[in-house]
Length: 399
Ligand code: PMP
Ligand code: GLU
Image 1: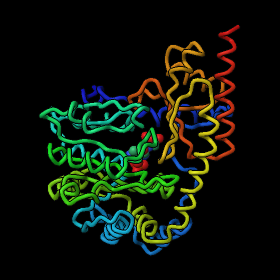
Image 2: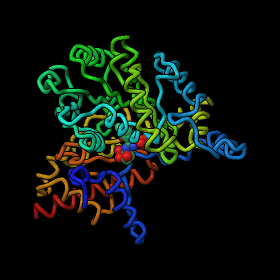
Image 3: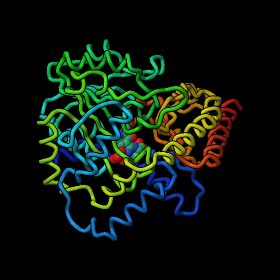
Image 4: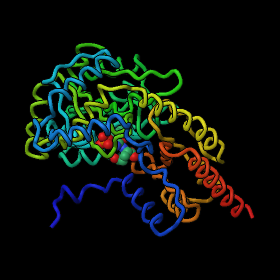
Protein backbone atom coordinates (compact mmCIF):
# COMPACT_ATOMS: atom_id res chain seq x y z
CA UNK A 1 0.00 0.00 0.00
CA UNK A 2 2.69 2.49 0.93
CA UNK A 3 4.37 4.63 -1.69
CA UNK A 4 8.08 4.28 -2.42
CA UNK A 5 8.36 7.86 -1.22
CA UNK A 6 7.11 6.92 2.21
CA UNK A 7 9.12 3.73 2.42
CA UNK A 8 12.43 5.47 1.83
CA UNK A 9 12.28 7.79 4.82
CA UNK A 10 12.84 7.31 8.52
CA UNK A 11 10.67 8.74 11.28
CA UNK A 12 12.09 11.90 12.90
CA UNK A 13 14.54 10.54 15.49
CA UNK A 14 14.16 13.57 17.73
CA UNK A 15 10.39 13.20 17.90
CA UNK A 16 10.61 9.40 18.23
CA UNK A 17 13.03 9.56 21.15
CA UNK A 18 10.98 12.30 22.83
CA UNK A 19 7.90 10.09 22.52
CA UNK A 20 9.74 7.12 24.01
CA UNK A 21 10.77 9.25 27.00
CA UNK A 22 7.18 10.52 27.38
CA UNK A 23 5.84 6.98 27.48
CA UNK A 24 8.21 6.03 30.30
CA UNK A 25 7.28 9.19 32.19
CA UNK A 26 3.60 8.26 31.82
CA UNK A 27 4.42 4.91 33.42
CA UNK A 28 5.67 6.82 36.44
CA UNK A 29 9.40 6.54 35.71
CA UNK A 30 11.47 9.61 36.51
CA UNK A 31 13.01 10.09 33.07
CA UNK A 32 14.93 13.26 32.21
CA UNK A 33 14.42 14.00 28.55
CA UNK A 34 17.18 15.89 26.78
CA UNK A 35 15.69 14.96 23.43
CA UNK A 36 13.74 17.84 21.95
CA UNK A 37 15.10 21.22 21.08
CA UNK A 38 12.27 23.03 22.75
CA UNK A 39 12.52 25.93 25.23
CA UNK A 40 10.84 25.12 28.54
CA UNK A 41 9.76 28.77 28.93
CA UNK A 42 6.16 29.72 28.34
CA UNK A 43 5.42 31.91 25.34
CA UNK A 44 5.83 35.55 26.49
CA UNK A 45 2.71 36.92 28.13
CA UNK A 46 2.27 39.90 25.82
CA UNK A 47 2.29 37.52 22.85
CA UNK A 48 -0.44 35.36 24.38
CA UNK A 49 -2.44 38.50 25.19
CA UNK A 50 -2.24 39.63 21.57
CA UNK A 51 -3.49 36.22 20.45
CA UNK A 52 -6.41 36.36 22.88
CA UNK A 53 -7.31 39.83 21.67
CA UNK A 54 -7.16 38.66 18.05
CA UNK A 55 -9.56 35.83 18.85
CA UNK A 56 -11.92 38.16 20.69
CA UNK A 57 -11.85 40.67 17.86
CA UNK A 58 -12.82 37.92 15.43
CA UNK A 59 -9.53 38.18 13.55
CA UNK A 60 -8.86 34.47 13.76
CA UNK A 61 -12.21 33.28 12.43
CA UNK A 62 -11.41 33.08 8.75
CA UNK A 63 -8.83 32.06 6.18
CA UNK A 64 -6.07 34.59 5.63
CA UNK A 65 -3.91 35.30 2.62
CA UNK A 66 -2.17 31.93 1.89
CA UNK A 67 1.31 33.20 2.58
CA UNK A 68 0.49 35.36 5.61
CA UNK A 69 -1.22 38.60 6.57
CA UNK A 70 0.47 41.78 5.34
CA UNK A 71 1.22 43.27 8.80
CA UNK A 72 3.06 40.08 9.74
CA UNK A 73 5.08 40.11 6.53
CA UNK A 74 5.98 43.73 7.20
CA UNK A 75 6.96 42.90 10.80
CA UNK A 76 9.22 40.10 9.57
CA UNK A 77 10.90 42.46 7.13
CA UNK A 78 11.36 45.18 9.76
CA UNK A 79 12.75 42.67 12.23
CA UNK A 80 15.40 41.45 9.81
CA UNK A 81 16.23 44.97 8.72
CA UNK A 82 16.86 45.88 12.36
CA UNK A 83 18.80 42.81 13.42
CA UNK A 84 20.53 41.77 10.19
CA UNK A 85 20.71 44.94 8.15
CA UNK A 86 19.09 43.17 5.23
CA UNK A 87 16.25 44.55 3.09
CA UNK A 88 13.26 42.70 1.75
CA UNK A 89 9.78 43.67 0.64
CA UNK A 90 6.44 41.97 1.31
CA UNK A 91 6.54 40.11 -2.00
CA UNK A 92 9.71 38.33 -0.80
CA UNK A 93 8.05 36.69 2.22
CA UNK A 94 6.21 33.38 2.62
CA UNK A 95 4.81 32.49 6.03
CA UNK A 96 4.02 28.85 6.83
CA UNK A 97 3.36 26.33 9.55
CA UNK A 98 6.78 26.22 11.21
CA UNK A 99 10.24 26.34 9.66
CA UNK A 100 9.97 22.60 9.12
CA UNK A 101 6.95 23.09 6.88
CA UNK A 102 8.56 25.99 5.05
CA UNK A 103 11.64 23.87 4.32
CA UNK A 104 9.44 21.04 3.09
CA UNK A 105 7.59 23.40 0.76
CA UNK A 106 10.87 24.87 -0.47
CA UNK A 107 12.26 21.45 -1.38
CA UNK A 108 9.01 20.53 -3.12
CA UNK A 109 9.26 23.80 -5.04
CA UNK A 110 12.84 23.53 -6.30
CA UNK A 111 13.94 19.88 -6.32
CA UNK A 112 13.54 17.57 -9.25
CA UNK A 113 14.43 13.91 -9.47
CA UNK A 114 18.16 13.64 -9.85
CA UNK A 115 18.98 16.98 -8.21
CA UNK A 116 21.69 16.96 -5.59
CA UNK A 117 21.61 18.96 -2.37
CA UNK A 118 24.77 19.60 -0.37
CA UNK A 119 24.27 18.98 3.35
CA UNK A 120 27.16 19.47 5.77
CA UNK A 121 27.09 16.79 8.47
CA UNK A 122 26.21 16.66 11.34
CA UNK A 123 22.88 18.08 10.21
CA UNK A 124 19.35 18.48 11.53
CA UNK A 125 17.39 15.25 11.09
CA UNK A 126 14.67 16.49 8.76
CA UNK A 127 16.86 17.92 5.99
CA UNK A 128 17.79 14.56 4.51
CA UNK A 129 14.29 13.11 4.64
CA UNK A 130 12.69 16.23 3.19
CA UNK A 131 15.18 16.32 0.31
CA UNK A 132 14.45 12.65 -0.38
CA UNK A 133 10.71 13.20 -0.20
CA UNK A 134 11.13 15.77 -2.94
CA UNK A 135 13.03 13.24 -5.09
CA UNK A 136 16.46 14.75 -4.53
CA UNK A 137 19.72 13.19 -3.45
CA UNK A 138 21.73 14.27 -0.43
CA UNK A 139 25.41 15.00 -0.90
CA UNK A 140 26.68 14.79 2.66
CA UNK A 141 29.84 16.72 3.43
CA UNK A 142 31.47 15.52 6.62
CA UNK A 143 32.69 18.04 9.15
CA UNK A 144 34.47 17.15 12.38
CA UNK A 145 35.35 18.62 15.74
CA UNK A 146 38.80 19.56 14.33
CA UNK A 147 37.24 22.21 12.09
CA UNK A 148 34.65 23.20 14.69
CA UNK A 149 32.08 21.25 12.65
CA UNK A 150 32.14 23.81 9.85
CA UNK A 151 32.31 23.07 6.16
CA UNK A 152 34.98 24.66 3.95
CA UNK A 153 34.80 25.82 0.35
CA UNK A 154 37.42 23.19 -0.49
CA UNK A 155 35.10 20.46 0.78
CA UNK A 156 32.15 21.92 -1.10
CA UNK A 157 34.24 21.97 -4.27
CA UNK A 158 35.10 18.32 -3.84
CA UNK A 159 31.49 17.28 -3.21
CA UNK A 160 29.97 19.43 -5.97
CA UNK A 161 28.40 17.70 -8.99
CA UNK A 162 26.84 19.15 -12.11
CA UNK A 163 23.45 18.23 -10.61
CA UNK A 164 24.01 20.24 -7.44
CA UNK A 165 21.10 22.57 -6.98
CA UNK A 166 21.32 23.79 -3.41
CA UNK A 167 23.39 23.94 -0.25
CA UNK A 168 21.79 23.84 3.19
CA UNK A 169 23.67 26.06 5.57
CA UNK A 170 22.45 26.05 9.15
CA UNK A 171 24.14 28.61 11.39
CA UNK A 172 23.97 28.49 14.41
CA UNK A 173 23.98 24.78 13.79
CA UNK A 174 21.73 22.08 15.18
CA UNK A 175 23.18 19.79 16.59
CA UNK A 176 26.74 21.12 17.11
CA UNK A 177 26.12 24.74 18.12
CA UNK A 178 28.77 25.98 15.66
CA UNK A 179 28.39 29.48 14.29
CA UNK A 180 29.97 30.54 10.98
CA UNK A 181 31.95 33.79 10.98
CA UNK A 182 31.35 36.61 8.53
CA UNK A 183 34.46 35.67 6.55
CA UNK A 184 33.46 32.02 6.33
CA UNK A 185 29.96 32.92 5.18
CA UNK A 186 31.34 35.36 2.64
CA UNK A 187 33.56 32.68 1.15
CA UNK A 188 30.79 30.08 1.03
CA UNK A 189 28.35 32.66 -0.35
CA UNK A 190 30.71 33.60 -3.18
CA UNK A 191 31.36 29.95 -3.94
CA UNK A 192 27.63 29.25 -4.19
CA UNK A 193 27.04 32.26 -6.46
CA UNK A 194 29.90 31.17 -8.72
CA UNK A 195 28.50 27.65 -9.04
CA UNK A 196 24.86 28.73 -9.27
CA UNK A 197 24.04 26.71 -6.16
CA UNK A 198 21.10 28.08 -4.19
CA UNK A 199 21.90 28.80 -0.55
CA UNK A 200 19.23 27.62 1.85
CA UNK A 201 20.20 29.49 5.00
CA UNK A 202 18.41 28.01 8.00
CA UNK A 203 18.90 30.74 10.59
CA UNK A 204 16.29 29.60 13.09
CA UNK A 205 18.77 29.85 16.01
CA UNK A 206 20.17 33.21 14.95
CA UNK A 207 19.12 35.09 18.09
CA UNK A 208 20.57 32.35 20.30
CA UNK A 209 24.31 33.03 20.36
CA UNK A 210 26.55 33.29 23.40
CA UNK A 211 29.67 35.00 24.71
CA UNK A 212 30.94 37.45 22.12
CA UNK A 213 29.67 35.37 19.18
CA UNK A 214 27.80 37.27 16.52
CA UNK A 215 25.31 35.68 14.25
CA UNK A 216 25.53 36.91 10.68
CA UNK A 217 22.77 36.68 8.12
CA UNK A 218 24.42 35.42 4.93
CA UNK A 219 22.06 37.45 2.75
CA UNK A 220 23.39 40.66 4.30
CA UNK A 221 26.87 40.10 2.87
CA UNK A 222 26.31 41.21 -0.71
CA UNK A 223 23.54 41.76 -3.18
CA UNK A 224 24.74 38.81 -5.26
CA UNK A 225 24.61 36.50 -2.28
CA UNK A 226 21.21 37.82 -1.25
CA UNK A 227 19.85 37.15 -4.76
CA UNK A 228 21.07 33.57 -4.49
CA UNK A 229 19.71 32.81 -1.02
CA UNK A 230 16.51 31.68 0.63
CA UNK A 231 16.50 32.51 4.33
CA UNK A 232 14.55 30.15 6.54
CA UNK A 233 13.52 31.30 9.96
CA UNK A 234 10.80 30.93 12.56
CA UNK A 235 9.67 31.89 16.02
CA UNK A 236 9.80 28.50 17.72
CA UNK A 237 13.20 28.76 19.36
CA UNK A 238 13.97 32.38 20.24
CA UNK A 239 10.43 33.28 21.25
CA UNK A 240 9.51 30.01 23.02
CA UNK A 241 6.72 29.47 20.50
CA UNK A 242 7.19 25.88 19.31
CA UNK A 243 3.46 25.16 19.64
CA UNK A 244 2.37 28.10 17.50
CA UNK A 245 4.17 26.74 14.43
CA UNK A 246 5.31 29.95 12.82
CA UNK A 247 7.99 29.73 10.14
CA UNK A 248 8.86 31.77 7.09
CA UNK A 249 11.10 32.13 4.06
CA UNK A 250 12.64 35.33 2.75
CA UNK A 251 14.02 35.51 -0.74
CA UNK A 252 14.54 37.86 -3.65
CA UNK A 253 13.96 34.91 -5.98
CA UNK A 254 10.47 35.69 -7.26
CA UNK A 255 10.12 32.32 -8.99
CA UNK A 256 10.82 30.44 -5.76
CA UNK A 257 8.52 32.59 -3.62
CA UNK A 258 5.78 32.23 -6.24
CA UNK A 259 6.26 28.43 -6.39
CA UNK A 260 6.14 28.12 -2.63
CA UNK A 261 2.98 30.23 -2.48
CA UNK A 262 1.30 27.98 -5.00
CA UNK A 263 2.12 24.85 -3.04
CA UNK A 264 0.98 26.37 0.25
CA UNK A 265 -2.28 27.47 -1.38
CA UNK A 266 -3.08 23.82 -2.10
CA UNK A 267 -1.62 22.39 1.05
CA UNK A 268 -2.50 24.30 4.21
CA UNK A 269 -4.23 27.42 2.78
CA UNK A 270 -2.52 29.48 5.46
CA UNK A 271 -0.80 29.33 8.84
CA UNK A 272 -3.49 29.34 11.56
CA UNK A 273 -4.70 32.93 11.81
CA UNK A 274 -4.30 33.24 15.57
CA UNK A 275 -0.64 32.21 15.33
CA UNK A 276 -0.07 34.95 12.80
CA UNK A 277 -1.37 37.58 15.20
CA UNK A 278 0.77 36.14 17.99
CA UNK A 279 3.81 36.26 15.70
CA UNK A 280 3.05 39.85 14.76
CA UNK A 281 3.21 40.86 18.42
CA UNK A 282 6.30 38.74 19.08
CA UNK A 283 8.25 40.42 16.31
CA UNK A 284 7.01 43.97 16.71
CA UNK A 285 6.60 44.12 20.52
CA UNK A 286 9.21 44.29 23.27
CA UNK A 287 12.25 42.01 22.87
CA UNK A 288 13.09 42.02 26.57
CA UNK A 289 11.79 38.53 27.35
CA UNK A 290 13.61 37.11 24.33
CA UNK A 291 16.86 38.51 25.65
CA UNK A 292 16.13 37.15 29.14
CA UNK A 293 15.56 33.69 27.70
CA UNK A 294 18.77 33.92 25.66
CA UNK A 295 20.69 34.77 28.84
CA UNK A 296 19.09 31.84 30.63
CA UNK A 297 20.18 29.48 27.83
CA UNK A 298 23.70 30.85 28.05
CA UNK A 299 23.76 30.23 31.79
CA UNK A 300 22.49 26.68 31.26
CA UNK A 301 25.14 26.12 28.59
CA UNK A 302 27.93 27.28 30.90
CA UNK A 303 26.81 25.09 33.78
CA UNK A 304 25.82 22.00 31.79
CA UNK A 305 28.87 22.08 29.51
CA UNK A 306 31.23 22.18 32.51
CA UNK A 307 29.58 19.08 33.96
CA UNK A 308 29.40 17.15 30.68
CA UNK A 309 32.88 17.82 29.32
CA UNK A 310 34.60 15.90 32.14
CA UNK A 311 32.56 12.71 31.76
CA UNK A 312 35.13 10.02 30.88
CA UNK A 313 35.68 9.84 27.12
CA UNK A 314 33.34 12.69 26.17
CA UNK A 315 34.90 14.99 23.60
CA UNK A 316 33.24 18.26 22.71
CA UNK A 317 33.96 21.87 21.95
CA UNK A 318 31.92 24.52 23.70
CA UNK A 319 28.99 25.46 21.46
CA UNK A 320 28.60 29.11 20.47
CA UNK A 321 24.91 29.03 19.68
CA UNK A 322 21.59 27.10 19.62
CA UNK A 323 20.88 24.89 22.67
CA UNK A 324 22.48 21.49 22.16
CA UNK A 325 25.61 19.64 23.23
CA UNK A 326 26.88 17.10 20.73
CA UNK A 327 29.72 15.17 22.37
CA UNK A 328 31.71 12.60 20.45
CA UNK A 329 31.61 9.53 22.71
CA UNK A 330 33.83 7.18 20.72
CA UNK A 331 36.32 7.00 23.58
CA UNK A 332 33.53 6.42 26.10
CA UNK A 333 32.32 3.46 24.07
CA UNK A 334 35.81 1.99 24.18
CA UNK A 335 36.15 2.59 27.92
CA UNK A 336 32.75 1.08 28.69
CA UNK A 337 32.85 -1.78 26.18
CA UNK A 338 29.92 -0.62 24.07
CA UNK A 339 30.11 -1.26 20.37
CA UNK A 340 27.47 1.20 19.24
CA UNK A 341 26.13 4.60 20.20
CA UNK A 342 22.58 3.32 19.72
CA UNK A 343 23.01 0.63 22.35
CA UNK A 344 24.64 3.15 24.72
CA UNK A 345 21.67 5.49 24.25
CA UNK A 346 19.20 2.66 24.79
CA UNK A 347 20.85 1.55 28.05
CA UNK A 348 21.26 5.12 29.24
CA UNK A 349 17.52 5.52 28.98
CA UNK A 350 16.63 2.16 30.50
CA UNK A 351 19.17 2.15 33.32
CA UNK A 352 19.91 5.81 34.10
CA UNK A 353 16.60 7.22 32.88
CA UNK A 354 18.16 9.92 30.76
CA UNK A 355 16.90 10.28 27.19
CA UNK A 356 19.31 11.64 24.57
CA UNK A 357 19.27 11.28 20.78
CA UNK A 358 21.80 9.10 18.98
CA UNK A 359 24.08 11.00 16.60
CA UNK A 360 23.15 8.56 13.84
CA UNK A 361 20.08 10.54 12.91
CA UNK A 362 22.24 13.64 12.51
CA UNK A 363 24.71 11.84 10.26
CA UNK A 364 27.39 11.14 12.89
CA UNK A 365 27.35 7.75 14.56
CA UNK A 366 30.02 8.61 17.14
CA UNK A 367 28.02 11.31 18.89
CA UNK A 368 24.96 11.87 21.03
CA UNK A 369 22.80 14.99 21.14
CA UNK A 370 21.57 16.55 24.35
CA UNK A 371 19.29 19.57 24.44
CA UNK A 372 19.98 21.99 27.29
CA UNK A 373 16.82 24.01 26.65
CA UNK A 374 15.23 22.63 29.84
CA UNK A 375 15.28 23.31 33.58
CA UNK A 376 18.73 23.78 35.12
CA UNK A 377 18.19 21.49 38.13
CA UNK A 378 17.12 18.68 35.80
CA UNK A 379 20.16 19.32 33.60
CA UNK A 380 22.45 18.96 36.61
CA UNK A 381 20.67 15.80 37.66
CA UNK A 382 20.96 14.44 34.11
CA UNK A 383 24.69 15.19 34.03
CA UNK A 384 25.29 13.31 37.29
CA UNK A 385 23.18 10.36 36.12
CA UNK A 386 25.15 10.13 32.85
CA UNK A 387 28.46 10.34 34.72
CA UNK A 388 27.39 7.66 37.23
CA UNK A 389 26.21 5.42 34.36
CA UNK A 390 29.52 5.75 32.49
CA UNK A 391 31.66 5.29 35.61
CA UNK A 392 29.68 2.24 36.65
CA UNK A 393 30.13 0.65 33.19
CA UNK A 394 33.86 1.36 33.30
CA UNK A 395 34.27 -0.18 36.73
CA UNK A 396 32.19 -3.25 35.74
CA UNK A 397 34.50 -3.69 32.79
CA UNK A 398 37.64 -3.35 34.90
CA UNK A 399 36.54 -5.78 37.59
N1 PMP B 1 15.59 24.01 11.46
C1 PMP B 1 16.31 23.56 12.50
C2 PMP B 1 17.79 23.57 12.40
C3 PMP B 1 15.68 23.07 13.63
O1 PMP B 1 16.39 22.61 14.66
C4 PMP B 1 14.27 23.04 13.69
C5 PMP B 1 13.65 22.44 14.92
N2 PMP B 1 12.39 22.47 15.10
C6 PMP B 1 13.56 23.55 12.58
C7 PMP B 1 14.26 24.02 11.48
C8 PMP B 1 12.07 23.57 12.52
O2 PMP B 1 11.52 24.47 13.42
P1 PMP B 1 9.94 24.69 13.55
O3 PMP B 1 9.60 24.28 14.94
O4 PMP B 1 9.70 26.14 13.28
O5 PMP B 1 9.27 23.83 12.54
N1 GLU C 1 14.22 21.00 15.97
C1 GLU C 1 14.02 20.41 17.26
C2 GLU C 1 15.07 19.36 17.50
O1 GLU C 1 15.99 19.22 16.72
C3 GLU C 1 12.61 19.92 17.44
C4 GLU C 1 12.29 18.54 16.95
C5 GLU C 1 12.31 18.43 15.48
O2 GLU C 1 11.53 19.14 14.86
O3 GLU C 1 13.11 17.66 14.99
O4 GLU C 1 15.00 18.71 18.50
